[in-house]
Length: 486
Ligand SMILES: [Zn+2]
Image (cartoon, rainbow, N blue to C red):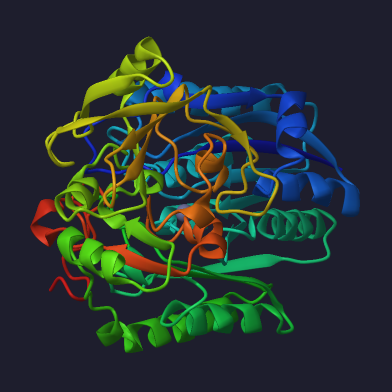
């Protein structure tokens, strides 16, 4: 048995100013995919394990992934889908296809891009079984469920179960190819906006819903049950949560089970109301906190949700309120260059952040002393959101700001980097346990890295491309009937 593997993954934020181009994608091809992903916690690592456990050969074609940002250009979309289709076409005889797609890709002119990708693969391979894995932040459209045989979605946020998701897809697909099961899939889209603020799968309201999915998956005749929280920053027709049930040979049962969980999600809609402090209030709470370190989760500059990484709203408040012992990371290529030119120990006067567009706060005048210069590479050996192992934030400088009771460390990097690994700051000589306030530019994802080193986490409703309280009037394609938009 030989199974083709491809990955084309991007979370595209319709509200971010910078498009995602061909050169923004990291690409692995052929056997290099196995070498790169095997030691990770990505779902492709699960596919690879599946090949060993369920006795099939993998034919890897292309894996292309880019940092979340604005929609993928039409050129980049056609380029990578074209390469995937060519890779499948040129492969020796295949028995099935495993596709790792994010589920929230928006391409220029193709809002539900992952659905289109699966449709094109289906057109090419005819009746060959296709199993797809998605990120929990997928906006699943009906056309994808029609084109695929199996869709499975991570069950955790922070995403730490990706290998298990990939392994499960490999199991179902290999059993389907052997004629042992006959996947029948149903999709239900509850008519709610399930705000990212409520996406933590370890606490209510999502945890009890996800538990139902886990319990159902253990039942006879059910092969898979997934819940996607959705991704509210993609302005697409099927933005919002999804329930996907895969039964063994029973379409009606798949539909009925998906509708039951969909109804349970609808029933908790009144719990989905936001009450989150703004930057001024959140910084005040952090300063007053007796437990330290406090981690401030900066929702409006959620880099993993496609924001700039150079927002200054929280930093501005830390400086204005005289906070002590803070750490903030800001993506700022110019300031990094200035620090490298000045050298370690030099005093620098910088214009920091707010440079990408006019959504992410003012450019701040900050002076300080260059404390560390680093190449920005780091490695994560533990299971963290996204499952990655090797990271780079480009040349990185740490600047010590302030004196006396108002000191802080500004980590300036030259590539946008999600705070999914604590080694983003430890690599540059910052010890979390010695800090009082650490800012993580993200929503739920940084929890896997920051909960173990923080006494307390405080969420911040800041502005930016990933503001959590975006006006429904800013959306063109998303359904306006969703609760609480009606
Ligand atoms: Zn996600």
